[in-house]
Length: 432
Image 1 (cartoon, rainbow, N blue to C red):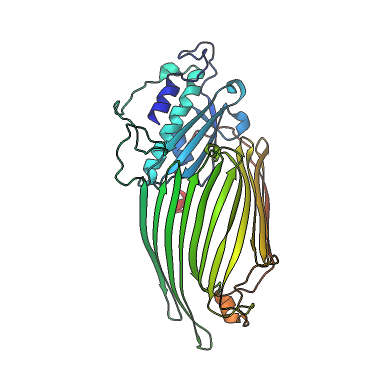
Image 2 (cartoon, helix red, strand yellow):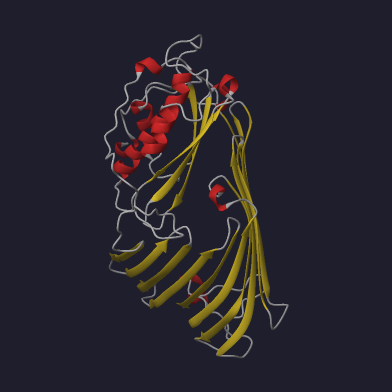
């Protein structure tokens, strides 16, 4: 990060006419439109306005000189890698930059926020210099000039002088959570231990996880009858992925689970898979067009005899997934399809379609659409006996359904002042 930022500040890839002084380009501070979804950890708009004061922050893209798009992806070390795309608009249209910032899995929110803020500050300096504000900055370097990198192995992005990593990229996490609610006529308690191990490099992606869920619920009805819902559900999964090219990956996806609501003591599934991304994986933050195919085997051991008259069975199954996602200056959109089928009987299948669109129509006017549809005809776990009303109400079992549809549509419009530099922290929501 430090090297990239320093190269930016020294004018690497900058236009020849950019000067530190006011060489005729005196338009004042550049105006920035921040395009950062709420799920991007560390993207604190109020903090950015307070800490980065050499730019104006615009409420609408049409009033800005720079469109800053921030996306993030989880890293194998438990942190996040942020990609910052600085897109020049208007007279700065010829200027575009991309910086990255990677947080550690042990960073607290304040550290992530400060690190992301520093990356944004460095990226915006080029646009400030273009506006003639270069003489207002002082540049210092506080790093180690003899540093060589952060470790690695051949094929994993490390260099010959990389630092030694005793864990060889492995990250482990153990967690325990639980809750309890005790009342005279009702008790609820849950206990959830978890374990996860990850190793992520440019060449390999490995993930192993275990999750247990012990649940004890009791309800007393109006006539004094006591209803209990005791469940011991568990799930283990393993994923091994090998990068073949910038567009192709192969791997194995395996897992096992026990689920009361699916009438299964255990379900074990293993499927080799191949995935193709039309765009290079390096661009996955901004756009992806993926086809994923996985043929495999599934073994189930049922709690009750199913409607097909079996207590256990092993079946061949395959799954196809297609997905397109893009995030551009006009907004973001995505559409996807998944299809799975038991190969011994072509009539046992499920198919789902879904998509979303967040589109900036004109200044201040945005359109938001999302929806999904699923056709389900593969509920082979449905018990042969009638499902009781008690199990339905407790959520232990649900009646079979051949479809599910969801949709939402929204339009929003904003108007008023185009700038939003001022921060006022009085009456925070946490105290109201």
